[in-house]
Length: 180
Ligand code: 5GP
Ligand code: MG
Ligand code: MG
Figure 1 (cartoon, rainbow, N blue to C red):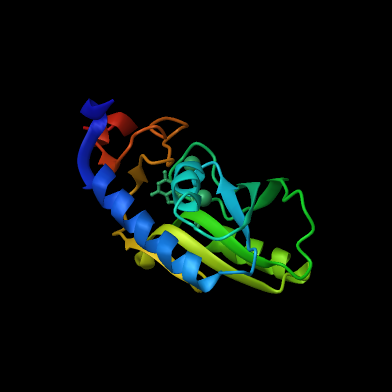
Figure 2: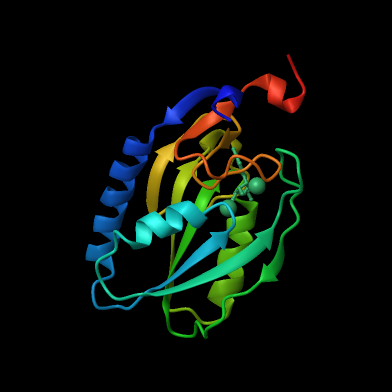
């Protein structure tokens, strides 16, 4: 699998340091507010597991599955809720955990839907952001790293459902996509 990687962007250690930093900030901001932390699957599953273990104040955990991409590397712009949050969000302080903010279309849609359900507050924590590709403005409250317009894999992020289990984040060799 390592043979498929062209370049490592963030090592396991760099990711762990950033996650600890974000966890500490979230702990301070949400102390005694019992936030509902919602991971948008599947891409954020690794980040979510690491991040929540760095949050040292009581919280609830939930998951959503939203589809916006097929097998390819570009968004279709369509968003569908496949699996919803399982608890009432009325009056709750929500923290959405995402792997990457690309066009922002998915998150923009999600935040609107959740706000309309009566959440008290909604903040976004995303590990990665690609500013060059943002199509709609989505405010990021907690950001890991900004990255250039490259398709990254690892640490939960897939290409055609592979590479999620890589402990680091990197980009693939063009040969993996059937190129040179
Ligand atoms: P958006 O709605 O912001 O365009 O798309 C967000 C979702 O697209 C992310 O949560 C992620 O699942 C997927 N995505 C966007 N960019 C990348 C990328 O560089 N690599 C991978 N593996 N998935 C991406
Ligand atoms: Mg995602
Ligand atoms: Mg994907």
